[in-house]
Image (cartoon, helix red, strand yellow):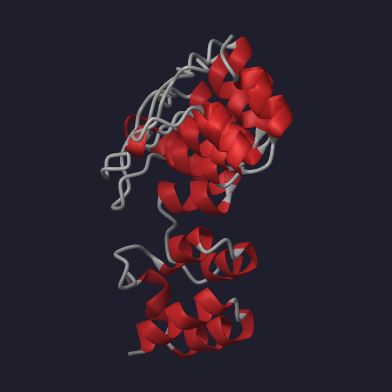
Length: 217
């Protein structure tokens, strides 16, 4: 029951309660949650950065995935130097270290991973087929997206339901990301399952000028 209480407080964003629970039971920081991931990763997925940082102080040994998700550069780089052949491994929930660093917006860490051989075109292994570029665009991060494209990331890869990076950028209404993707060969004619184009998603969100830009002649 205690792990359930910890999960609840993480979800609620109650840092003091999380700290109190962990002080009372230090092993919990290293115990998987009901979601099959660590409390630290759970906090990251809930976008509770302060709580993730707090939990990291109680973790015995951060995994590479945890370090990349929470943005612990020194810990992540040390782990890569110790085990360079693990850089393209998958977490228990199917994501690569690079994918996690991209999704959570840790630019320096993402650059380091690519420099050390992380595959920019390696999709998640969990049925979602999420590539690092999908994660970077979903995070609305121009710099990481550009870094991935400059290092050979494919602009037209599709994740589950046929969602390409341009679809997401169009949905976000981010013209800079859209231009960046178009400059690197993103195709406006890609359709999701169900037939929707990037222009359709932009229009649905009220970005009508962007939708017009993305319409094929």
